Image 1: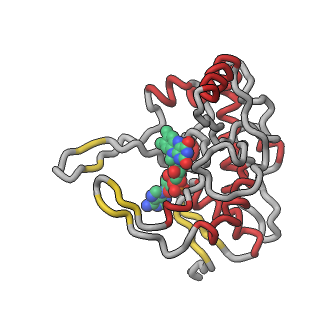
Image 2 (image 1 turned 60 degrees about the horizontal axis):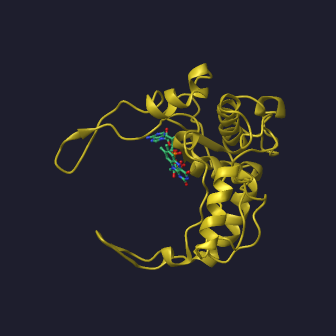
Image 3 (image 1 turned 90 degrees about the vertical axis):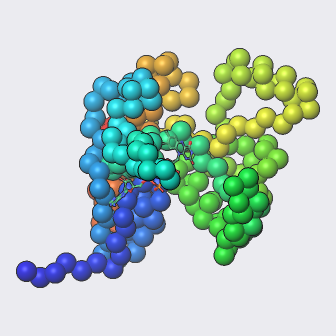
Length: 233
Ligand SMILES: Cc1cc2nc3c(=O)[nH]c(=O)nc-3n(C[C@H](O)[C@H](O)[C@H](O)COP(=O)(O)OP(=O)(O)OC[C@H]3O[C@@H](n4cnc5c(N)ncnc54)[C@H](O)[C@@H]3O)c2cc1C
């Protein structure tokens, strides 16, 4: 049997592996993607916040062991899209100081070999791919950055009142940088009713997987067409 040969092997299809695949697929390199999990089944339960968040239907049932040898079930999801299928869709950049040595309660986090300025252009590209919403300059802890690709998610009326009150107190509440809805979702997940919001949420996570980790031809044409982007691929 002729052995298969690849230029690159990417292990895992979450935000890390998927985004890397998205960037490298158009180069024409032969890329093998290895994923230990299956695709998340499209079923009513994955549109149900109780099933996903409370009953933890999709979380792994495997056991890990802590430093005392005690078993515990980790909050991990193995599948195409990884934990990134289930995350809160908040896409913060590391702060400038995170790249230096940081003194924490449990010890020193050593300095990175690169700094924020080196990564900043890649953050820009990733935010474009993911369609991040936010307001540059609103968060005083933000590192230097340009505008977000999309304006922030509008506050609900109750939240808006809280934000105004906090501002009157001299505080600086800022919108989370988030991926809330995108052109490929039929429903605006930010303004939908709870039932439709849940569906839109499933769709947008699916969109994220398709956007970054669907197989692409060497020419960069995604095999996951727009029609499929609109649902769970
Ligand atoms: C409920 C929840 C909410 C979260 N909310 C946020 C948030 O709002 N913002 C944020 O920044 N982060 C959030 N996180 C953390 C976020 O999920 C991770 O930072 C992010 O998904 C990590 O991406 P990743 O690609 O590194 O890993 P993952 O998305 O976990 O992907 C790893 C992939 O590797 C696969 N894999 C693992 N081992 C193997 C193996 N041996 N062989 C082959 N494949 C393997 C897994 O199946 C998985 O698909 C949240 C996490 C959870 C659980």
